Amino acid sequence: MALSPLSPLPPTASLRKDHNIIVRITEAKNLPPDCMDMYAVIRVDNDVANQFKTRTIWRSRTPFWDEESDFNLGKTFNDVYSTLLDLTAN
Image (cartoon, rainbow, N blue to C red; front, side, top):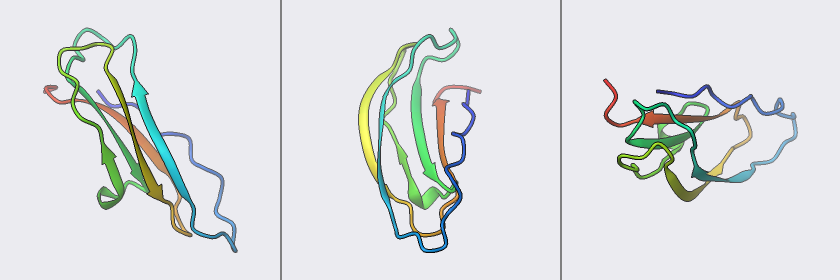
């Protein structure tokens, strides 16, 4: 199961400086019964080199991570994506 990406952030300004953001992944609630071994992934511009993956929470429909990561958005970033995945999904 994968969630939709976040809404795109505002367009980049021509003179914008690099920015850092801190993303905290806290929890998920009310997941469907077939979603039991969950982890989350955050990416900037869908770039695998600029991503953060939480640990997997096993056998839970209400996973609690309480993890955070910081990202450098650079001068030309477009989107920040979040995805919730089931490790054992077929």
